[in-house]
Image (tube, rainbow, N blue to C red; front, top):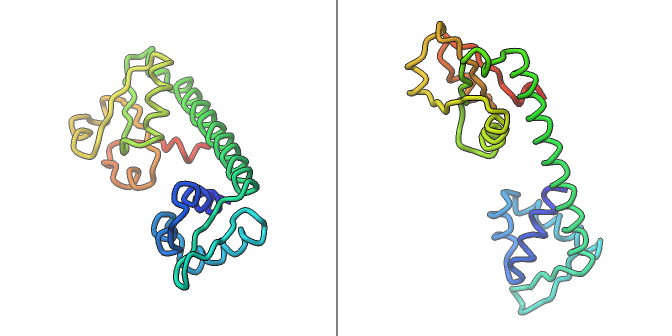
Length: 173
């Protein structure tokens, strides 16, 4: 379903394109793009118009636009549920650690991505003091500092200095 959405989005933005360009943008193999386009044509989501012997134009049909809207709606619902789960997990951790009451800041240890944005927003709303740290800046703390370290990617868990116990928020969902 996710791949269909990506292909439909590409076709909506680029009527004149190639399967190779679709493959490059979506990360799908050329064969997968070919099969997906054939399936979408059979379902009536896409119409193929031959421009010349070697080129075609892919046209998103009204049914294809409707399907893209449906997939967009599903994606938004799924994303919103994931945000709520992350926020709930953070609330549980805060309830257990009580970092704001004891003055122990929370350390967000990971890349500046969407998950960090969600965590930042939620911690700010809760009035919890937090800091961003990476592999270099976390060295200024020791285990005695009693910091709550939150991660959200397995790579950061593995890179975490041994003196810290990190909680992976995504593993709690």
